[in-house]
Amino acid sequence: MGRSSITPSGSASFKPDNLGQNALALIGNLCFTLFVIGVLIFTTIAATYNPEDPLIFPNPSSKITNFFTSNSNSTFKSDNAVVNTGEDFVTSNQTAFSNFINITDLDPEPEINDNQICRVTDPINCRDPDVFHLLMRYAIESFKDIHFYRFGKPVKGDNDTSCHMAWRFRPKDGKTASFYKDYRSFTVVKSENCTHSVVGIGEYHSGGNARKRKVPNKTVNDRNTLPEVGETVNDALPEIESEGSFSHGKYLIYSGGGDRCKNMHHYLWSFICMLGEAQYLNRTLVMDLSMCLSKIYTSSGHDEEGKDFRFYFDFEHLMDSTSVLDQVQFWSEWTKWQQKDGLSLHLVEDFRVTPMALSEKKATLIMRKFGSVEPDNYWYRVCEGEAEKVIKRPWHMIWKSRRLLDVASAIAARMNWDFDSVHIERGKKASNKKLWPNLGKDTLPRALLRSLKHKIEDGRNLYIVTDERKLSLFNPLKDKYSTHFLDEYKDLWDSNSDWYSETMKLNSGNPVEFDGYMRMSVDTEVFLRGKKQIETFNDLTKDCKNGINTC
Image (cartoon, rainbow, N blue to C red; front, top):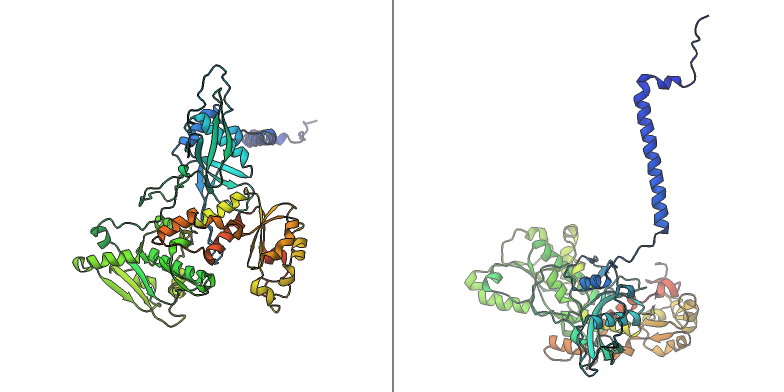
């Protein structure tokens, strides 16, 4: 009987011609198994590992010293500008840091040396590293609702027991990642055993000696570089270096038009169009720094000329972002050099002439002259139609005035950056029952208390932004909250304030009124700094913002 032809099951896989495929399959299975084991190990470590703070090094003292003295910008990154085109929300571009400073990052308090002899009457050495760490520790422990990102080195204060120090920070729980600065005065005393202690700290911006004085007309080469701690505003007009630098330049200017004395939203919409065209044509924008403020913002109820652009917007940032000249400066130079250097002018009297049609013009100055027929005389018409696809409106170049932002930060600081904010809109809308049938009753105190009951905890600081003139209407809210309004902080813009003295310098020594648009700007900025932000039409009433059936 012959050998059976039946072989064991699967024996065909061991044939010589299948060995290569089997080896590859085995290696693949082995690699996959190792990968799964690695993932399991990594997951276990990630779930149980508690990493050290990224700023902590084996030697905290050397680490923190290097961190504060380094000129590198590697510890922070720049945010994109956040700008709303509505007139109420032209917000500032700030900087968010990747790491903040904890109390554990600082040196421990120095040990007491009983054998060391000290003269208690000697002035405090504010540059002493131990004093530096003491001030940082005291600041971090005093302001628990903010994150500190950078401290400036302390400097001598107003007397022998005073040190001034600046820092940059942001609120812990605010919705915005905005970045602020402060500089304060510390009162430091020395004991007989040579130890120092802080016995007092001043109000917001009380440490004026730590405020960096920026060199006038300094050229900014790196526009992404964050200003130094405590740096002051430098929005002086740029200097024209020489005849040659002026004569070889190319310029764009808008003349006339109906944009003057309009509301600020209209003005900005037109201004940004003009700025966008200058960017497109690669020309220096010649702008009028003297503005007309619409009567809707003035206490007189009339349009007011002679307002400086720098009262409302950050001209320093604008100069750092693009090439601009004040028209008074420009015409002075133009008169001096026009005939001598053969400077040429190209006049455009029709807004329908597109920026693309002007891109090849070689004239020194392109002047757009606008007529008197509305709405064809508005600057923003240049950016409509075909040009709308080409001209990019550079909103990121327009920031609110840093002086106004300082006022807003001072208000937030007085509430220790620990407050909630609510916007209560009433005014004309509340009296128009056809469009807003519920707004009036929904913003009365009893209704507000019901609405806020589950949104804001009792006893909280509550900053109220409102167009209601009779603030006493909101007195019942004081039973539940510590209420605050803009007018409580008038000392921040009165005749003794920094804002008052700095705006006077811009205004040829004449006082500047803290007008309605400034109030609106500051109110908006304080509102945005609140930990919770309650809006009228989103949170307090079922009416629609733009009237019935527009939600």
